[in-house]
Image (cartoon, rainbow, N blue to C red; front, side, top):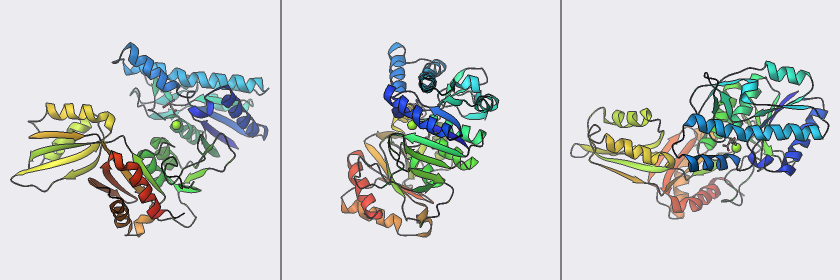
Length: 401
Ligand code: ASP
Ligand code: MG
């Protein structure tokens, strides 16, 4: 078997954890498997590097930031190869340049285009454990790029797809994917299985356990994932196309505090206005989520939408600059909001979910400001201070003890 094993930053945070990971990988190697290991930077290294950069130059070029961040993963893979060496196993570390993991040129948010497999295959054939840097790639200028925060998961899935791996295991510091954040909802349960689509919604909504692009890629290439803990032997959660088990109505509840609401007020009620507003956002690479347009009155209308909190400043600046062109009288914003979502493939065939969710929120006195839905998700925008209470209420409503 060829197994890709990915370990996040907390799993390689110090010497003891590195040795622990080395031992777990060697166990598989000793069974005769081919083992490819993908690592993130140790502990909070990436945050620390970003702070160092901001301290020296808050407007540093993204190219240089990527050059800097890529060192984090390089440290982990080299130390891991040394750890395995100290245990008498031959291992080799490779960075994105050595594998050649080709990406698009966009620094800090690059996407994989193609991965060369010759070097890895060659090292596996000579019975080495191959340890590859997560989160990074090489663009057409031969510059290092990074995939966006949390991107090592995507490296693991991309490698598993390129190498036609038999298993792709994502190791983290929790035992799998939970029905809600266990720190907020103490009776949250670990799921045995979840579909790609549900996982994708949860990952996009801020359940931090998997990078959303890794789930997209796993679905596209049919890579079955297992999310499990590097610290225990617990079984973990399988992410795959269809879940055979009896389908729960709701698989999980997610909360996302990284959201802000923008309202563009007094727009002319005529064709093309929404296009102008959202085209501006798209042109500045600001992704927009929940959208609400008011009914036109006296020839004007309002459009409200949410953006990531981290994009709010940029969004407001762009809108103010183009206020006349989009015919806005006023622009308002509020970053004390949060999203709570229920996700479940079961809601496609059950009509009671929306009303159940709204009832649960009503019972704990939470006011809903905006609503958006998809096939398998209902999201409400609420006040940030209500988010934990709302998450617990909605979880208790749908996921019995
Ligand atoms: N080290 C990177 C980060 O902290 C990538 C990862 O952990 O997946 O975002
Ligand atoms: Mg991660």
